[in-house]
Image (tube, rainbow, N blue to C red; front, side):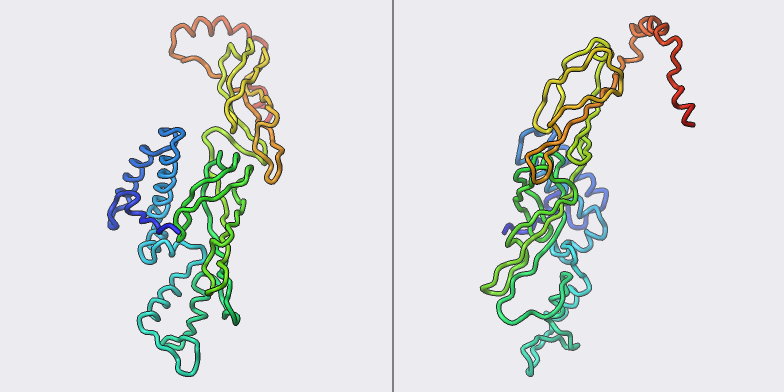
Length: 311
């Protein structure tokens, strides 16, 4: 397993850096390694995810305090700082009880109970080699990685960098099980499993509703009036879509099967494209006489009647 990352080193700041210094360092690195600046550069994408995770921890006062005191282990779900400190005190002055195989501290605390509760568990171990405990966590993934699926590299608290396979059609709340990636078991016993819950980052222009995707597409006035063939982005690449002549702004067109896969199925949802008229530069002097020519075409039409009826 990879060594846990040092988040201060990742951002290139000292451990005494101020919030402002951390923010400035993150912004500088984010601009350098952002996927939009480095298209199709896998290494830059992975570096961007590493610095984003480091900033998420160090920009949060509580997370930074736990990280400073306990390292990445302190970021694990269910971590109990009070019991961790108790264990540290025990490890510095523990004694072994002569009448039992159970380790206790000078205050009579049962070590097995202490260790069992350190990460949210409890109870004594049963006789014989015990399987490792299951672990859990949350990870952020890009919108298109969740929609398309595939293998991605992520940072997992107290486990470093891991490669995971995301099922096509995943969304926020989808759980992924990594067998044998949980806590270690007793000698001769298997490790537990790691259960990761996905949190999907928003996309700049796609919106998702179930397996359907929605997209606002800027179009020109001539394209709406005369009709046109235009390029439309989809999760699987651009496709050509025909705009029917005499279309209104805000008209919605459907591209069948161009949405997100339905989780666990080969079937896909649809992509709904909303046409939004993009006006020329209003400051262009050539536009004024054209606007005057259009005025008679609006005669007899109350464009805002609907708004008054609903107020």
